[in-house]
Length: 402
Ligand code: PMP
Ligand code: GLU
Image 1 (spheres, rainbow, N blue to C red):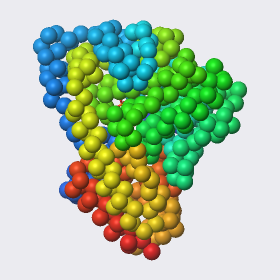
Image 2: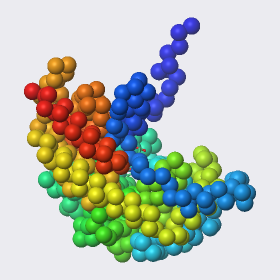
Image 3: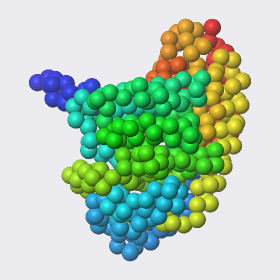
């Protein structure tokens, strides 16, 4: 008997977009498996390995018997380290019961969406935005309100634009700084102004995704939750994936109002229980030990930023920003829309990404996944050799478009 799978699957999954970053990464792997030399600049993942001392701490924790369930919101030892880190790096004060550890910052943000959104509630998402925000909001019935900035303002919105986007359905404002996909960093003044606007609406929550905090080339990271105007209404999200090169460990966390932490913990208690025990011990070690390996990675990313920015800006028609953090660059490539190769016409950034994978064997992600149809995202978490090779392949592929 033929089964209609679509009649079985939920509307939720049928209307949901697949993660564009993960999809491109898989397409790149598939092409490489066929024997092609693919350069994968699609996924946002440090190419460095987790620092040795953190791996050693995990091995030791395993031997010490950290192999059981932990408390749902996390081991006290890790929560104490996070509490110390929030104070040390962000000027944020949290009690231990205001902190929840999850399986990656992805789960942290998903928990928060589950915790506060009812059908029809609006979340203002500062765009370009990380792919998963809009889908996570939609998954729980919320409505993403995309507030978009272009390359001419370094992809940053103003406080006034935030104010204008607020309605009586607005539940939260969600953004990342340093930003994935643009690398833009909101500075002290810009965040202060946004905080002052949102502070006028005490029921609106700020979800501040600071996962790229340690990859910041401006020298100083600012947390919006540190402004008095929004102290009580900000949940700060962070994790270990980027700053400590620990993507596969799946560890993220939040600090926010106690009621938010309680809600996230309640949700997590029914879904995943808690994060891996021995990983949490190693994560505590990561935060409390010397951050030199993290700073070294940041220096390497800054060098690569300079390299890719300079090389990409030499490609005719590419408009390039100067990322101040994270490891992405987000050129506006709209000058090529309407041009054709022998095989295809490039109508948009999706087509161009497809063309670059097929023609140059370079995987990038279309800006449409991030709410910016004119751009493509390249991750520069790759070696300088690979980056040079990739950009020279891209430049050649662009020359063939007429
Ligand atoms: N936020 C942003 C902006 C990201 O780029 C990522 C990377 N996947 C995440 C959150 C989630 O990170 P993780 O789940 O690996 O902690
Ligand atoms: N944050 C990374 C990216 O944007 C990892 C992949 C993902 O989880 O989306 O590529």
